[in-house]
Length: 476
Image 1 (spheres, helix red, strand yellow):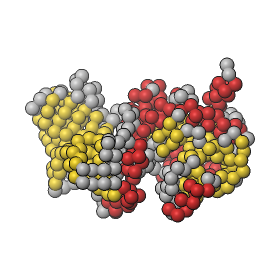
Image 2 (cartoon, helix red, strand yellow):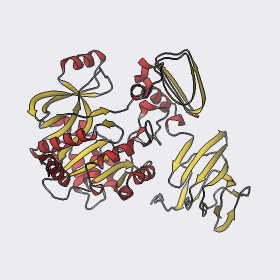
Image 3 (cartoon, one colour):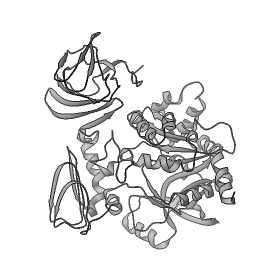
Image 4 (tube, one colour):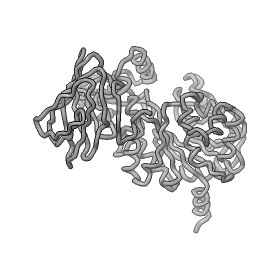
């Protein structure tokens, strides 16, 4: 066995991985929404960004040493996607009851691995980054583990190849050897002139958002820098950590710990990295045609150059544009010059301030039992297409403000209304009066599709009272 293999094996025995799978990816709107953020999307290749991350981490870690932290809204989809990569990892997914930024999420993961081993290490990875050359990435993890053993908190820096105002930067200090440096400071999202100077001087690297540290040392810094979080952590044996989640600070690991300590090192990345955080990155990394266009979906492009053209909602016909981004979904279209891509986040903020549902979800919403798609809606009515997976069962529930009418399109429906069960097949229907307890299931071996017509003064998803649910969604 070579020295390198021995070192890698030793690293694998001491280190745990925490994958952060929260976040909304607002800069990739309208494809990325709160209920389907970018890490759960296929944006290149055959796997989602989350699945690519899990596949890569599995090259260096045993499945039992990998924990994925997401939130309650995404937990079922995250588990499904991870199970498709490795069925043994479905139980490794942890759900935050609400978003509280990266530091509490990391601590939720540490709760599973802080077992008293003073040498134990933890590596933290975002779930929405692209990384090339996985062997170089593993080699850098091993180098970082040596630094962590010396009680250093380690981050990973990427040499900038262009001025980027959307990234944080690391200021390199003393050379520590083996491709690592001490950290002299951090700069958060500089202006263009400053970013250009960083590219020229060579002493500033992009902050990749990946970290590696000795768990004991990290918790010591939590006690010192974040007393509220430390109190929450120390009380976890009496009260489960998620029960106090609403009352803890909403704080990132960067602001909460990293920028407050001085024993930080940066490993200068030997691997290729991109956070795929903007449409410009999608264009830059995409496969281009002879005119320099990246085209996905049902697009007719005439006399177009150097543009990103995506359609997931019907024919997109584009004539005579250059250096443009055009992204069309079924319910929204984004159009902007490539040079204005940084303002997409402002679009999302404006829509959010207006209370627009376009920020929250696509017309098709994935649920643990299948999916539903809003076909049409107006004052006091909404029409949905509902698909229930074979063997799946929705919760037993009722609505205070709406009645429903279900029509089976294909498949077999097992329906229960006020404790009266019945079986419905194609073209059969049932009425669900307001305040009636009801349930829908698919007892068959093929997907069940129904049309649901809702009517009433209030039709939003929070008008659901659950009595029983196989997915654990009944509120205590």
